[in-house]
Amino acid sequence: MRQHWQFYLIFFLPLIHVIVFKYFPIYGIVIAFKKYNPVRGILGSPWVGLKYFRQFFASPTSWTLIVNTLRISVWSLVLGFPFPILLAIALNECGNRTYKKVVQMVTYAPYFISTVVLVGIILQVTDMRMGVINLVIQALGGQAINFMGRPEMFTPIYVISGIWAGAGYSSILYLAALSGVSPELHEAAIVDGASRLKRVIHIDLPSILPTVVLMLIINLGNVLNVGYEKVYLMQNDLNIRASEIISTYVYKVGLKQSNYSFSTAIGLMNTVVSLILVSAANFTAKRLTGSSMW
Image 1 (cartoon, rainbow, N blue to C red):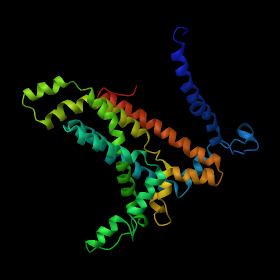
Image 2 (image 1 turned 135 degrees about the horizontal axis):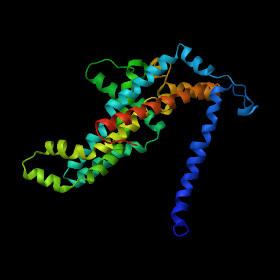
Image 3 (image 1 turned 135 degrees about the vertical axis):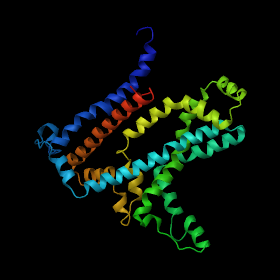
Image 4 (image 1 turned 90 degrees about the horizontal axis):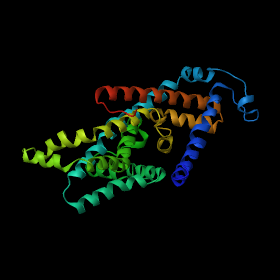
């Protein structure tokens, strides 16, 4: 340690960050089982057990929140997870370096747009009077559609905008994995008469399978952890029936209404479900493909 103290010093800083912001707040989970009073503190607040868990599941809105969250997450996973893989493979097979760099820049750029600006773009594009989509619909003889006012349109808009914003950046990991594929395998396949599609199926995809499995396990663990920022900004009185999810509900109840115990209980439930999903996905992936996180 004395000989390599510089490396331990570099490691020490992120270790402090993890302890302070990840492990130390675990103590606050106790709030979920207490009627928390900021004046009396965590230890001085009375113990109520599973009261807030029962309160959440007994609420008439709880199952609506769960269904809405699962619908958005599952569609985002089903449609959004394969897209970065396909984009990475397409870029990897592109022979024109200039065109490849331009496509990379164009697809990466939306990731760096803030959520507020992204939602602003969505609202402008889908606007009934001045939105590009409705202008095209009207030019073709159709009637303008209130996209943000129709509950059934909320999930498609959320998922499609998420793919547009994140697919390019997510493909970087798969591009890095594809760069590690041995060129000798492709050369041997070309000699054997394999087409480009067959080389992708039998060489590229098996080579990046461990990376794909790892990312799938991580994404499955976040099924119930849909971020509230984008959903909250896209919400309005007309689509609230389809857009209210667990995270936005926790935000409104926990911070706006200062019901910290109730929101902590819901967050703890999310964490437990996510842990179960990650463990199950890891076990299944290890049995089927031999690749896993642990």
